[in-house]
Length: 216
Ligand SMILES: Nc1ncnc2c1ncn2[C@@H]1O[C@H](COP(=O)(O)OP(=O)(O)O)[C@@H](O)[C@H]1O
Ligand SMILES: O=c1ccn([C@@H]2O[C@H](COP(=O)(O)OP(=O)(O)O)[C@@H](O)[C@H]2O)c(=O)[nH]1
Ligand SMILES: [Mg+2]
Image (tube, rainbow, N blue to C red; front, side):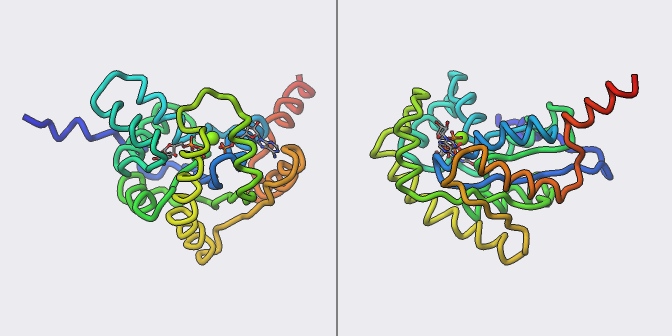
């Protein structure tokens, strides 16, 4: 018999302040690259939706096989799966500041997140990059991913344009979108990203460490 409680992942204590930032952009736009830089400076926990799914594929389960097939075809996995993986990783991290990379990818993802996690993002960082540049980067990144081939990449671009752009427009209407030009060198892009995160008023991790040392 199916056990309904297996779907219960948990929740944050009521009243606890949790900061969430979504990082969205096409495949190869530099989401992972910029997230690593943000983590270094601002002490967020980086959760890549794609990485969580790739980990799930490694578990030799029926769900893992289903996810593997969808990813290979460049399609999106069912929303409740990715949202539960995200919430589980958030709770396990012990942190209160999260960068959610590569999510939400469609309106259904966004609604499932609202239903299950229900923590409004502070803002949504959109790394805007041309298709030609994204394709060039993906075909050169050599991470051994099954979905980094010309056929699947073009399907992923199609999904991005059809399903993710409406999500971006949704956050733009709410005044939550922060767009950066991702076509430039990583450190130049990060200058703009830093300016966006500075608005959050989170102290820069390296500065905090330096101040701590000076007081000793
Ligand atoms: N601004 C940039 N300019 C040139 N190459 C980049 C830039 N940002 C990332 N890359 C490279 O492009 C590839 C895709 O970047 P990645 O961060 O994995 O993108 P995403 O997570 O959006 O798919 C990687 O090989 C990365 O090193
Ligand atoms: O919320 C998500 C995030 C990712 N994916 C799947 O995971 C793949 C890879 O996503 P990732 O973010 O790792 O790719 P990137 O954009 O970084 O190249 C996508 O094409 C989808 O098949 C998904 O279904 N839902
Ligand atoms: Mg990535």
